[in-house]
Amino acid sequence: WGHIAKFAFNEKSNRDDDKLGLQIVKDLHRTGYSKFCDKNRPENRAALKRVLLGYARWNKAVGYCQGFNVIAALILDVFEGNEEQALKVMIYLIDYVLPKNYFANNLRALSVDMAVFRDLLREEEPDLCQHLDKLQAEAAEEAGSDYEPPLTNVFTMQWFLTIFATCLPRDTILRIWDCVLLEGSTVLVRTSLALWSILGERISAAENAHEFYSMMGYISQKMLEGRIIDRDALIQKIYSNGSFPHPIIEELRDKYTYNITPFTSSTSEVPSKYSTSGSTGSTRDSDDDDENYVECPQTPPAKCLGGFFPYPEEGNFYCASITDYLEYLK
Amino acid sequence: MDEVHTTKVVLLGRTGSGKTSLIVRYISSVFSENVKPTIGAAFSKKTVQLIHGEERKQVVLAIWDTAGDERYESMAPLYYRNSSAAIICFDLADRQSYNKVDFWVKELVEKVEQNCKLYICGTKTDLLAEYGGPLKRAVGPTEVMAYAKKLNAKFVETSSKSNYGIDDLFKLVAADFAGFTLCEAPPIEDSLRLQEPNQTDVNEKSSCCF
Image (cartoon, rainbow over all chains, first blue to last red; front, side, top):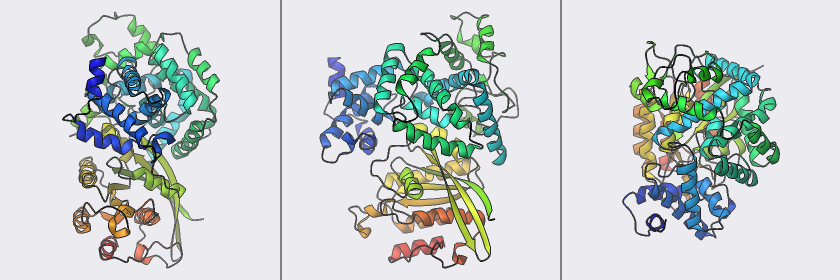
């Protein structure tokens, strides 16, 4: 660690530092924590910068990602300004607890978790999902578009990317982070499921997509202020969702990670329940080669971040990531 | 009963170019130096009343704010698809931020967003020396105007801090969408005309826009 710390906090400038530094500096005062906004306390921001730059030097593939500023600010605050400890925890959290490629490689693992999350939400909150699907379909129709992102996407994605640091009050975030550190990254999916389930009744009142988004804008603000979500009830709900390790989340993650998922010709198709993938699962061993996962007719399509791209004419189109798809479009 | 139309507007631009501040000023009439970076995207909505002679229309602007971080660029198509207007922001005092404008223009053109009207928005006029701020313009208005003209885009300048040009920008977007022309707007308090320009380059800008 001594060696890593020395490299990460090296005062000499490295080759990539300037560009990274510029981006990081732009976000130092934008963490939402007054400690780092205060112009009279420049040392706090300098410490935050060193931690963020330290992480970016440590993991060049990930570098700096917007949202890290909020995560690092909170960690630094918990460790009362101890930069080395803060960096260590940040490295542990991002590189060893969260799935690989959550922030790198076109957010691939994040896309996987989004797909996993949607499958599970459909299972657990079928009425809510049906309602949201309807709003989504109507919005697409109104826009004359053949696709529209699933309504929950924009919020869930932000929750995942900041490990809830931009959506909940500090004490609740720390409780969730404790769970993440203790139980692993499935807590992210569990927490999102619990949050949507708690919000379900409220958002079911939305009559169209715009109303839903406006409502969620308001709700997000209230959540951040510590209303709406009861901390203890949330933690209980997270823990009541299956055992640890989760019986299904890991399996679904594997499925979406290794399956190169076909784009099908129907946007309105409701993916079959994840339980059907269980029956497929029984026919394969966990140590199967990745090739065996390529075509898996019984599993629902992942459609990357949720099937919002237009489907190609030919049925034999396969898409591994958004970038691949955009490449294909070109 | 007025006619009500809804239209989708997207804000694009480099990180720190002031997209979120622009929207927060427009929607909530407040300004903060410390607005958090947008992760992914964020939605807001506001209704604009348009009056033209006897004709009255209401335009609901469904506004999508997007993330400036390049990491999240691959998500942008979700939010600009089927927009009737894209406001591409850049920081008037930051050349890099201006350089990014062309990236978004090309992206929109390539992805065949034909019906999307382009607005190029230079932000943070309050920071410029000519408005009493500490910084120099990083890009001359003539250059931006020539570029905007080539694209058939409109160029506006705003300050979210001093609330300059923001309402006008969104009214312009709404009016363009509804097929109203600004010069025909009635000279009422809520008129669509920009405030009287008092400087040469701003003058040029207005004549370019309207």
